[in-house]
Image (cartoon, helix red, strand yellow):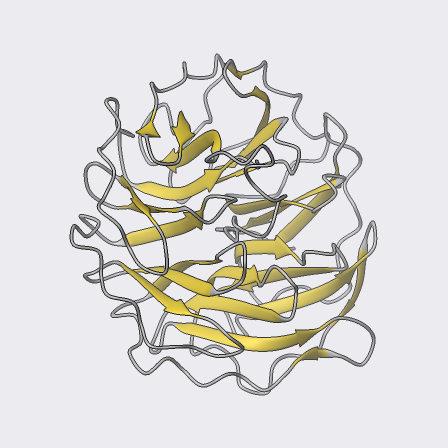
Length: 351
């Protein structure tokens, strides 16, 4: 994702007027490879859910993502069959893993995303064609045909636009970001941006209104954002100016707040997460959290109501969560049972 890539609006939180109550998933490097916790804004972590009866087969570089209705939880990983999806019930946890797709992704998977209507699921992977998409209806349908123009190299993050009309892939070779029109199948690839990201795209996210697209990448300034206009003859606008205080290391994850007012980047090198006001351009970087994550930031996600922000990172406790209100609050207490290794991806369930 990210996704967070993963924080693209999945419904306004707190329909009943209260704080967000949902679940927080972390995909990590060591067995059981996926850990999920109840989450309540203002309170923090609940007791970790029981592990799934069928564990993912590996945890390196994996991503996790809830379906838009919260009924399923997908985990992409680097060993065959490369993608697991479980039924998910908040308060209960994992159901029995769905059957694998009849046509597996061809290699190690790094990214996963559901379409906004939940009708499709995309995975990015090491081997050509670098992006694979399936219809989804409480199980995998027959794989869609590959795009006529493939991404340039192995896929990392992916996300659908908020209206589901486009599918973006961050990848390892120039132009480092590729976007396709999407309508129950790949349409024509959009033209590359005139100023591409500097190197190796990792995370990608659209603003909640779909007007901008962000790419977290290796090499300074580690984050690139472009105006975006969907439809024939449109696509990338002129790259926005880089932030005056860029992230301090390679960008791995990127997420916009649900109201689109802030953009967060998880990155190598302390403070490991940087957040900026966003109004069709970067504002002055917010102050770092008083207690920073303990290692390289791998991913970042906001709760659907924007009240909290989570960072997955390299070192114990592997996941750090903060209240968010145009700035970081005091870090929540760590979960009583932390993830068991590097947390490559974090995701909140929809409200």
